[in-house]
Image 1 (tube, rainbow, N blue to C red):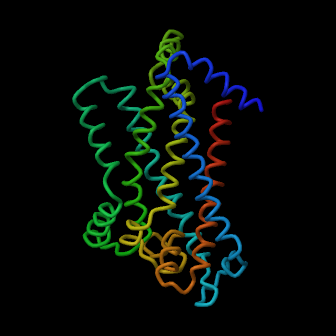
Image 2: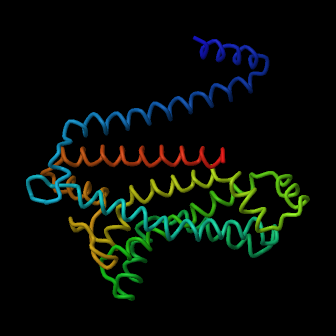
Image 3: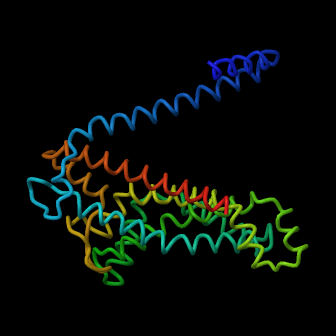
Length: 286
């Protein structure tokens, strides 16, 4: 009731200006459509997937009958951990240099930002072909965990750089000036003042990058491969949950298991996002 009351009050206030009322209603309509579509997608995945989840899906021994997703689950976690370990430090420190050290408005900064935005818009299949040609063929690593990890790291690097850069730019300059006024150097100011303030936005970018890693299929198939086993080392092949789901759905024999894999994939993403959000709150309070 309080929500409806507030909503009606806003409508009455904006009724004096028709254009404001139209834009206000359009904004709420778009937000409502987005929420409904999101709920429908999540509901569809969970309703069709949860009834097919069974303990045999998590068996360490993979057979044609149980089509266990255990190797794919471990492979996904390994891929996420290694890709973030490669991409996050490079992306964050690159953004710090562009915002805090490089001359603002310089040609170099403009070129880097344009290149980053261009790389962010390239289809994943192109990254997959590049990873296959360079890492798998030229370097001789074949279908391996390291080939897939480096390919995905290059994919998410522009996203992490841009989100980190915008987060750093959103920190008021008065924070920096106050730190300099107290005698702190630039390095101490960046790591003690600016980064903690920008941490929620940076972690938001990491969350988006994690979602892209987990849901990636094309680039993974070209570099990691799609063998149902847990990689023993960086040069071993494997499979992710997205690849596992693709294989089951394309075969047409285990559609129910494919739905179950999608539900588990969704649950994993929700858990990762929740942990990242809690970590962002803790870092902000600290």
